[in-house]
Image 1 (cartoon, rainbow, N blue to C red):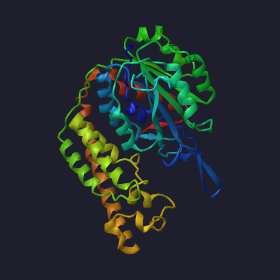
Image 2: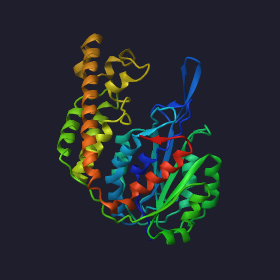
Image 3: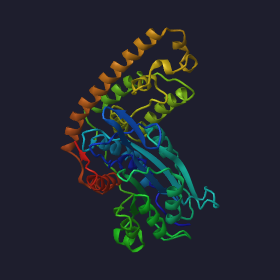
Image 4: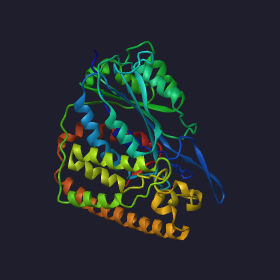
Length: 391
């Protein structure tokens, strides 16, 4: 059985947001993975989506790395919320997740599984991250790279930022599928491959992890996956958690997905809280940003979307409490919840500024070698070429 790293970097996913933003580019909706167009005065404007595929080894016991990724997921999302395109708009992203090298996976598929197709649903990404478990197996980096390149619908726009993050600690050249050929295919598609070796940097470089990244102009990184991450509690944490509870009360589910998605929101809040109270705080901050959009199941987000009105949602898709109300009554309720949500989100942002200032004075230096920092540095470097900035 070969050891590999179970880098559930859904967190990474969320940080891989170096989004390209030329003046003619506006944010894409999270509804699908295809490029869309929106018509404005002067003609159609292309919209881009940043696509990030996380390829995570789940062989053997890598609980330390998994926990690190879980606790840092919302740090990465929050960092991404400060990203701006060259034209001042905020980009959005889609994350796909693969696991490989796990004995529980099909040997016919090369011990590879697509856990999540491209998605912008932060609760779903969190759910998939928490669902991963480790087991021994065969780890084939070239094969999982090739599979993700073939299965996922990568955008065609040459200006679009498309990234793969693959993590592990066994030689990169294992398996029958050549990692070199997979890297060349990625380059043809405009996909940048970034590699994260779990262990000594020199060992990773000597076992082809560095070459796997440089073939596409990506970054090679090495981290200590067993490093304990220090979370700093602040006098503001309790208030942010309290505000998060109030924020949840502004969601009104609808449609076939509604009830299950509302429950998923609560479960992911609990998952974060069980990790650390500070992790729950970071998740609440993420939920106060525009990245947390649930228009597929929440009436408030749905009817706040451009071109989407209450009239487009049939009565039988509404919760029972609303089905007998008039359109005017429903719209009045939605407006009330919309304003309440906006106010709570703004309160969380204000309190979080104080929290960040408090943390900045006490941030431990040893977190610099963590997964979060390694990925953020890679993203920012590659995003710079696409005229991104962080505010």
